Image 1 (spheres, rainbow, N blue to C red):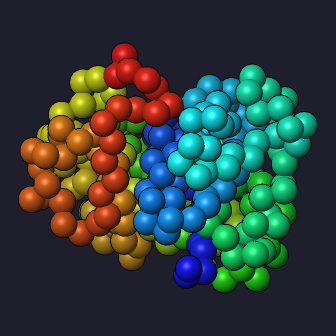
Image 2: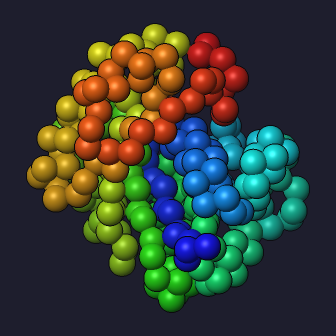
Length: 226
C-alpha cells in the first residue's frame, strides 16, 4: 500500500467544506482500500460537522476524531483532540477538516511538525461562487492569499463546490468552475477537485476535464436538498 497523504481543508463558512471532506474520505477509502482518518477540527460551528457521522463513515473504513473528551456526538465544547497527529506521523491518510474562514488556520501551528515530518500533504481550499465571501475570482484570490499569509503552509489546490443546495443546476457548477479557473491562473494553484451531484454531472461530464470529480447521489451532511 502506498504511503498516505495529509489533506488539510479550508474554506469559508457555507462553502460545503465538510460535505467535501466526507466525500473525499469515502473516495480515498475506496481507492486505497485502506483506512482514512478524519480529524474534525471545527470548534466554531456546531452544525454540519463530520463528527456527527461517526457511525455512518465507520462502515466505509473511516475513523472520525473529534473532541478531546471522546464524546463526538452532540459535543459543542471547543475541546480539540490532537490524537490524529500520531496517524499523520505514521504516514496514514488523514483529512484535517478545519473550521471555516481564517479562524480555522489558528490550529495549524501545533500541527506543523507532524505534517512536515510525514512528507506528503495537500492543502485544499474549497470555493463556492455562490457565497458572498467568494462570489468573484478576485475575492477567491484574496481569500487564498490571506490564508497563505497566515502560516508556513500554502494552498496547493482549489476545489469547486459551486452549489445552491436544492436549486443547483449544471450551469451553477460550470459558472463556479469558470471563476475558480480564472482565480487559479492568477494564483498559480491548480483546480484539483469538483464536488457535484451525480445527475448534474451526467449533464456536464464532457465539460469537466481539468480536475478530479467526486460525485454523490445524496448529501451526507444534509440528508436532503432542503
